[in-house]
Amino acid sequence: MSKLLKLAWRNVWRNRRRSLLTMGAITFSVIIIAVTRSLQYGAYDAMESYAVRLFTGDVQIHRAGYHEEKLLSYSLREDEQDWPVLLEEKPWIEAYTRRLTGFGLISSDSSSAGGMILGIEAEAEQRVSIFASNLCDGAALHSRDDHAVLLGETLAKNLNVGVGDTVAVLTQGYRNVMGADLYAVKGLLRTGSLDLDRALMIMRLLDAQDLFALYGSFTEVVLRTDDYRRDVLYARRLRATLDEARYEVMFWGELLPELRQAIVLDNVSGIVFLLFLLLLIGFEIFNTTTMSVMERVREFGVMQSVGMKPRQLSLLVGLELMLKIAFALLAGLLITFILALIFQDQSLPLSQEFVEISNSFGFPLDELVLSTRPAVFVEPLLSVLIIAILVMIYPIFKVWRLTPDVALRTS
Image 1 (cartoon, helix red, strand yellow):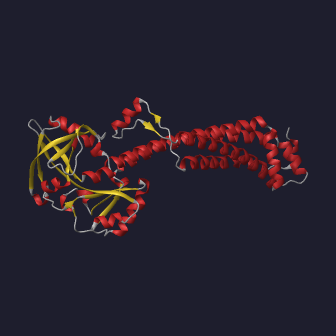
Image 2 (cartoon, one colour):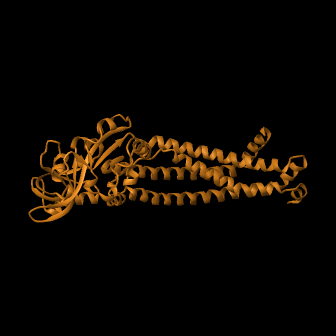
């Protein structure tokens, strides 16, 4: 085996120009694939982290059936669990907050609109999400602000109100109890999400409990963990702790299926681009390997005449190709890793067109960071290896079937 490896090494550099062209093409393709995928994954990471931190949180706990029905009858009670002990004893939960979500009619002197009314614990919410802090006017909500609310910017425009004005709220609360009250507008929100800006009203959790006649209750517990990408694992751990017949634990991927689907669909385009490059690499490897084999048919005949077996010749051709691919992959991945180290702490500005597109989807992005997740390096490595193995089949099979008499007669 060592003799064949030495012979393969010598043959690789015997035609230096062809070998360098082949390795250069593979190296360049690996870099293009890795950098492209790194940018894609960087965009996905930015979108996911923003969506999770904006409103949804990493994991949510509801009463079983609440996510489908969104009814106040599926509320949770403060006294049914020792929530602080249950959540604070888990080291991977960095923060949590309680919310009460309901719906009602919001009116001003000139207009009315339906809205989502959200009761929050102001200080705790700031440790979990950022939507209540994205103010375009006024001041943030605090736990001491009695009968004060924040309105989405678009909702405020539709109601023709601003900071300091008063709005009336009419709701149907728990067990059909009618709720009505007046609230002062303390601030206006611009979250970047069109749906939230058009419908959201935020108030203290205590005010929401009074409005909906849900004293000592809330509809969801929202968690922030140490890694939102491990949401499935953490949700599974919580499900093992809680009674699944009474509670539903949902990770952000279940709460934002549209985002997951959009990322999957966009990822398909990246895979198509990768396959296109792999096709070009495959043709390059196949062309150079087949040419090398055809030019050396008489050489192979001589080697068989002095005692080398067809399987040894086939192994020799395979080793030559694998040496070229190994060097090219090593060079490509090394260059990619160096680029990732250089740019991992530097954001890349996006064009105005891309910023406008991301804003239209509710995920305002103006810069990207190259992702260094393992898939960036593993995908080019595995894909090039697979395509190389496939294109090796024909040249190796051709060498395997060579006989000395046929090979020596080949001109």
